[in-house]
Length: 112
Image (cartoon, rainbow, N blue to C red; front, side, top):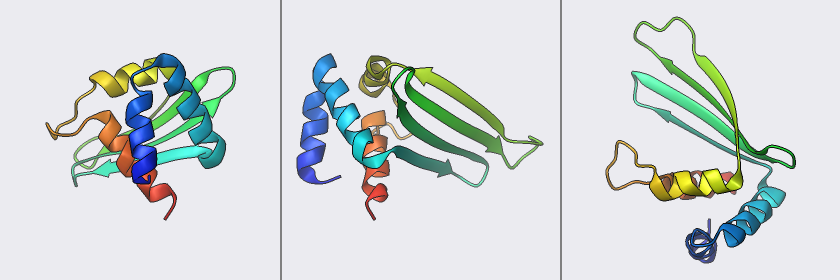
């Protein structure tokens, strides 16, 4: 994500309508947002796409290399507003990272 887009993203978080427009525009040009996490013991892979009926469709595959026989796949539908609230409120293991930070890092890799 360019610096201008990051600034627009942060500004859009402040308004339900602006965030909806930002997400719609983002997925119009990117189609799918993919990301993953792997610490050698636990892993997760996710894909997010925008669906006109269901809002955001998030597919998450999680697993463990220590005892879990098969990965677990889950698909959830959330509204764009629910996603905005997750970004505003969710924290990760890295106390300095929020979901918006993760979104930025993942979006940066799409254009490469």
